[in-house]
Amino acid sequence: MGDSLKATIATTVGSSLIFETASAKTPQVDLAPSNASLNSFTPFVFVQIPLPYEKNALEPFIDTMTMDIHYTKHHAAYIKNVNEAIVAENITYQTEKEFFDNASKLSPKARNNAGGAWNHNFFWQIMKPHVEGTPNGKVLEAIDNSFGSMPKFIEQFNAAAMARFGSGWAWLIKDSDGKLVITSTPNQDNPLMDDAEIKGTPLLGLDVWEHAYYLKYQNQRKEYVSNWWNIVNWDEVAKLLG
Ligand code: MN
Image (cartoon, rainbow, N blue to C red; front, side):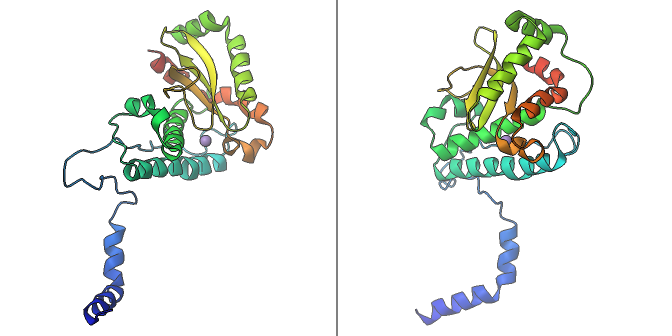
């Protein structure tokens, strides 16, 4: 090692305070592609939405500690990991739609974490603090038309949530014919993915990963699923239905 290099290292170590200060200003994930200087292209990245309510707002149906860990640990990790994959793998899709239209071509890291990022942003928004009442207007009409009645719809949706073996999601979607359909997906897959068994626009999604309920409900997924209807944001479902 030459003397000048030794000197450089010594200087760097000696000025660690400055180094730390500089690094603290650097974003955790560098979202600019490595060839940023060659073009001005910026890829689509995922952003974690702020929770639309306090972490204790869905009590007693979803407990505060579960909300806290789910949002700040699990969801935050999906966001961080998908954005890392976007940079590392030079993924250049420019919209969320384009991303999921090409899900079958993504690496497992990009696919699983993109699903986790999107699914949870969606999940937070289709829930709200408990108020008495069930859907009305066009949502109720669409549910009645597709499933016969609200109780029949809930029964079928709950069955899909219970039948999903292991980790995954249950969904209510609007298919390309405008018909409402219940489906479920494994892992962090969703019905927007090009290779989903049943594709469509999500109107409702229920996270049935154990991390979503285990602290409060332990092995009682059925109780978590039936309690969840108390905190569904039907106004949001109406907006999504269009
Ligand atoms: Mn989850």
